[in-house]
Image (cartoon, rainbow, N blue to C red; front, side, top):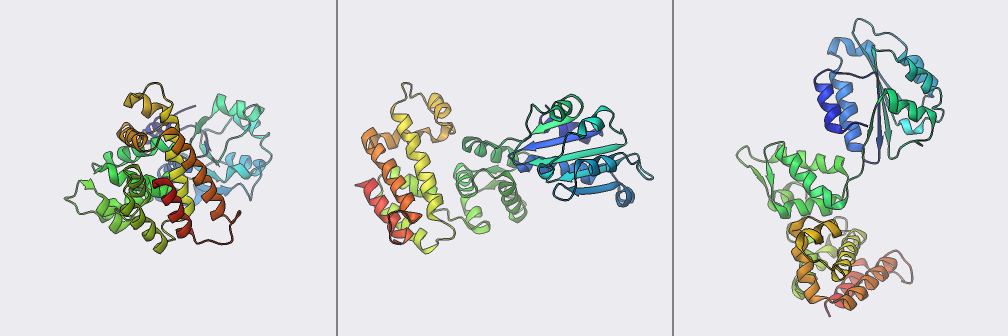
Length: 334
């Protein structure tokens, strides 16, 4: 199984394989590879007769194979992209094509949001004769590094707070993150070499002062006034700050804090590895542990669970989300 970098390096060097099978939970890298194959192997005069984009919901594997067996017209290659390949049912016949694929056909399967059963013969045959790539979802603690590397490749730096704002607001969806980063790159002035929280607030709409990251910081430092100001802002901007997103972030933090309390080694590097956070944020757990002992932390986790249930209508008659959050914050800070 090859890495994304290996595949892209070969494609840019015009080293092609007859069959590519791109699979996995993270769509971003699958799209990056398939888009490159679709847009760069054929020139403008060759595309009309030699590019065929198929969809798994509309074809069976026999149709794909028949298309792959055709020869290109006035071109060295024909390119076939099979999108939504996970919707194809009858894969077994692919083994016959893999035994002798047409070298003038570049056949690319995009099998998103999962992967096939590795025990199947056709999957084993793929691993022997095709370029197979699995695109895995990043863990939460890996997204920040991905953002920094994405911007560094474009000769731009991003502040730690700006990075955290994006991570909390966008989650681990790399396609969504890349779109927002590209928006920032387009809108920044040529002389600007840093992405700041102010730029994110202006161009993406995430408040630099009123977000989950700042709420978490207020709780860590037991800043009652700041925490309540943020909750009030959330109540006035419900779409940008849905209660489930806020609760999810708080649950993640306090669950990690409970783990922190019982770590025998509280060296920052060990803490970062055990909690799967970047070393920069280990100081938050050091400070939070001073203000919330293990018993209090356990209670907070219980209150967060209760608030989550009530926000979904369980044992609650319709309390407004902002009131639920005010109640939760009061319990945490008192």
